[in-house]
Image 1 (tube, rainbow, N blue to C red):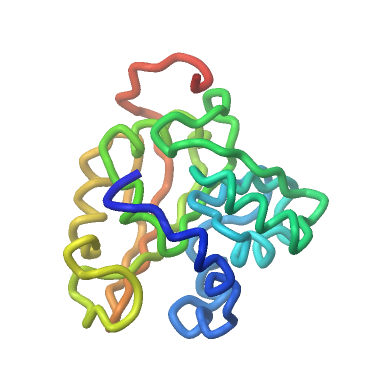
Image 2 (image 1 turned 30 degrees about the vertical axis):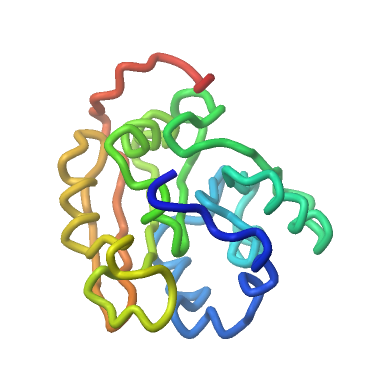
Length: 196
């Protein structure tokens, strides 16, 4: 993943309800269609995964750190959620296996052309992806240092530059940005089947 991964020693902080002041459940659900088979990219302790699960058929909680999944298991994982330990640029899903995906405050950890191409491979045409993350233009009093963040313009350009997505909406706020994209029929992935 990008600059860093979240310190597992601070995992309890990821379950702090004050996080909703930066991204409410209603706002998150407005960024993508939560129905069907969904992936939470950088799921951590499952804080937002738990909020999306009642609206989805299946949710894959994807995180690169197995220790985050251990923390999530201790809390209790909903029956329709499965944990997946993987990098975003090498997802263990078949082509078009996901109806959608979302990422909450983790885009800066995996943003790369390879990750977006992989996302285009696994999200079915017409599927939606919602991104909410800390903005490079924020004050930096919360979240990672601004030097490790992207702006809405950066994220919009990354998704626009990938033939697999069309940007539908975006908004930059005081400390964060949100972006909603849709998977198009064309993509430039060279991979033909599931990740390794």
